[in-house]
Length: 469
Image (cartoon, rainbow, N blue to C red; front, top):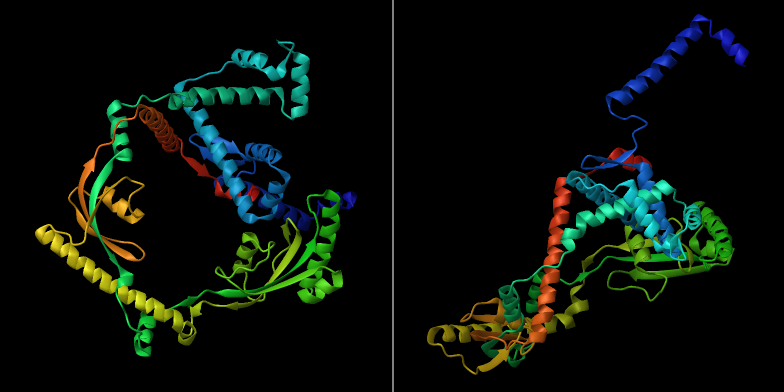
């Protein structure tokens, strides 16, 4: 064959064809050069001026997976949402590492080889009888999967990280006035005057059908979309390797039968596995089935009518699911909800009457300063009145007059005055520590935002889609 090709290469037709072939390779190379798609470029993202390679991404991904429990690993590999979250986590971690490295470089921080060596010698992991042991160091590095240079780079990066971030972790001295203001805001009390108007005190008759229909037209009762879903289960303890191998072979045969057009019922009988069907599954009508968790529910509502899922790995075994029927969201028939509508209509009318009465009391209060049937109470931010009343009492100014609604009542509220709390040294000290920690947190957040602005991260979508997705 080689001799034939060598002889044929001298013929005109062969030379022409070889010319086309050579041009195509050269053209391809030129296109790569022109459009910046060099095969050697594996930069998955840039952080500031730093390039992050696919290899660096893969190394960190492998290390993270090695530290991830087996059950979570399986979820990452089988659940697209979990895999996407894991990939984002790796990219964020790489971005943070390079932002810190960039900042250390800009600040001129340097960790010499001598300093790295000194840190290694002082690490307890590499010592024996209180002294550095080169034999122990060699043994640990050989069994860890890291080279000496990789360990040195990790130590250098960790030390630079400490030098860059240390200022953001310093204790923040909180001014006394800030602690006192926070103390007064948290533990201060207010004196309120209020009158209660209960909705249930207003007697309302039975509505006519016309009134109910008019009310229902304005307040329709929706029935959520529902689905009839069935599935087959190849049961097994998949955390056991020998069981896993046995069950996946059965599951693959089941999958082949279903793809071939066999029904789930017949497939279950043929392989002696579990078949389950749930009708009218919706967000408000979940089946009492431990296997049918959020993952299966989400997949069921992502599928179209008549579709089967791919093989799904669960704690209980392998599952293949089918959506038999979809009933779209629709309005309930009037007669089916008539009894409930009567109660709603009556409550709505009581609410209207109660608000009219509450408004009358508020008008009188604003006019002559008197609030009929009122009570006075001293309330804190957490006690002394319903939550909505407490919220209004502390979110509005002293002297404010308003109407506050709760589930079954209206409160006509007048904020009379406020009472400063008695100072408690123990509470003050605890609050000072809390405010200091909050300040440190906000400083760290601000610094993180600064790093993101200073060293923006840009994903190379082409490389990401080629090597990661």
